Length: 242
Image (cartoon, rainbow, N blue to C red):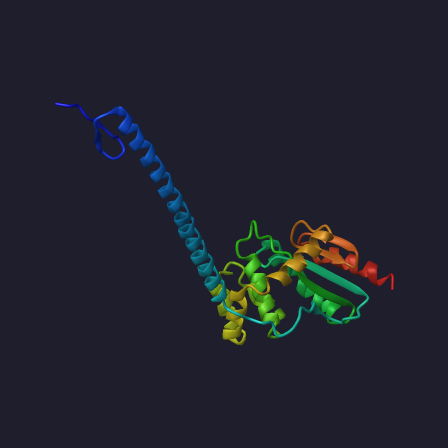
């Protein structure tokens, strides 16, 4: 009985080695063509997946809340706009020392200098997001409140509740002070106010602010929640120059 040689690729049997080699060569060319045809289909499938993911991402972005600010950014200040002495505070709503200044020193500055027209008191955002988890969103929330004309009332509510600045709490405080809750929620969820907060932060960095609270009494820098006496001295010195 004649011994036959089997092809490892397809299992066919041949009586002579030469016939097997010819078969293998033909089969090899056939397999190469099949691979070439399969490769584009693979990339078509991958491309389709990428398009689907991209489309899904677009749909995700498109479904985010839309909010257009009622007004452009305006400086948050108390007192006479043209006062000769300007006190600027760079602050973080979650910063405990900022809270201490708000509770202890700010009321005295307002009573003695702001309410009497001698000082313009300005608040600017400087959220330390790396250490204060809720500071950035709290700052954005205050800008959403500002868009409804209640920055300072919301500012006070945040500092009065520093230990509860969770997203749900930020929305509750808006309702508590009588804001249009639907508009506020849309504003906060949209993230549209992040750029306003960032502009204050970048300005502070440009002036050498590295921690909160940091103040400037005109160009005199005061760092930390210093006692009223420190501010009084700086303010009186600046008033004496006018």
